[in-house]
Image (cartoon, rainbow, N blue to C red; front, side, top):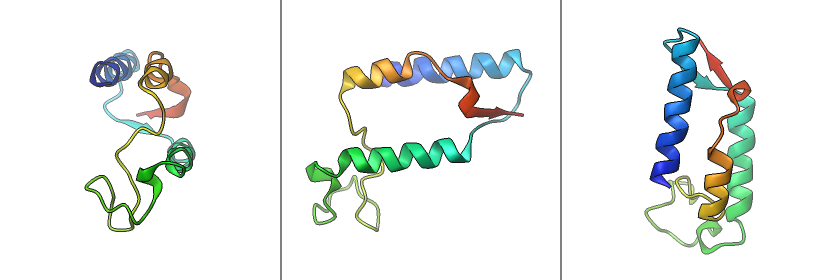
Length: 89
């Protein structure tokens, strides 16, 4: 997954350089939708249970650092960046 993350970030940096942008930001509605889907994906797992109490959870009992799907899906979803989901400034 780390290699996928690096590839994703390199693509975003490359696009920022093409656009001469010094700031890149995920669009607010895109982030909200992603978080909603991540929490929904974790609901049926032990990590989605607020009683779990692991270091993955925040002070509200939500797992905020876990990918809710398979590693293969992570690869497929991060291999090509949809630049329309970002603000380049």
